[in-house]
Image (cartoon, rainbow, N blue to C red; front, side, top):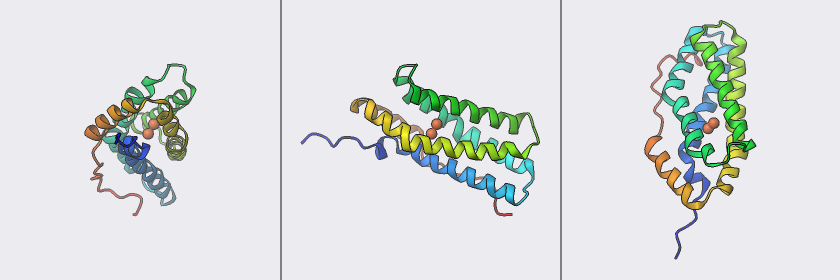
Length: 160
Ligand SMILES: [Fe+2]
Ligand SMILES: [Fe+2]
């Protein structure tokens, strides 16, 4: 019997798991804003996630997946643009110390919209376009590189 065709849920599972962390980030930021959490506490957490999850996640999506399609591909182009916007907001918040709460609001909205876009539109599109064997290769690398993320951040600004 031929091997079962790879399912998106398996091939891109490590990335989807991390999307859940992104959605939690959006939720935590909104909670923090509602609770009037101190700007720096929220900024520190954003930096922690950027360094430990977001940077590698974006880089791997771009290099392992988007680069497989022609440069002019609009679907991947959209995602690259959103990565740039998210990185820009993170730099404004964490490095430039631009004390403007609306940046957090924008970041939460953009991160959430980006995850929804990838899960609902881009990943199914990639799965349909990429050859089975290529997906298998990507799945293997993703599984090795993206273990379940263990969030060890202790300062729970979203609660208190
Ligand atoms: Fe992405
Ligand atoms: Fe993603």
